[in-house]
Image (tube, rainbow, N blue to C red):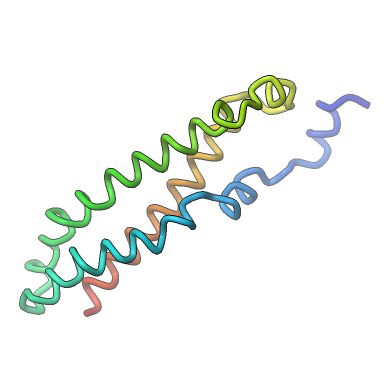
Length: 125
């Protein structure tokens, strides 16, 4: 039985593994502190009207989350090169774009979840 036949009989949930082991989880406390001290306190000073508070999302939150999202995505994308396992993962059943897409998808999942939690906190407060 070949590796291809084994992979077709029982698919491995690669995205679930990547979501569980994502590096974004280590950056969430930093993003939470940045969100609280910049965006949340700015929004708390505005009147409780959703159109006024939504200006904080575009003027502060996107500027705060953007560089962190780009940095974490670059860190995840360079994982195979940093660990020097390119020749080891070259023999896997999945193509390279599928491995990297699952890693970047997990990064995007956690960053969007943190961003949407921040938007909800601004609107609920």
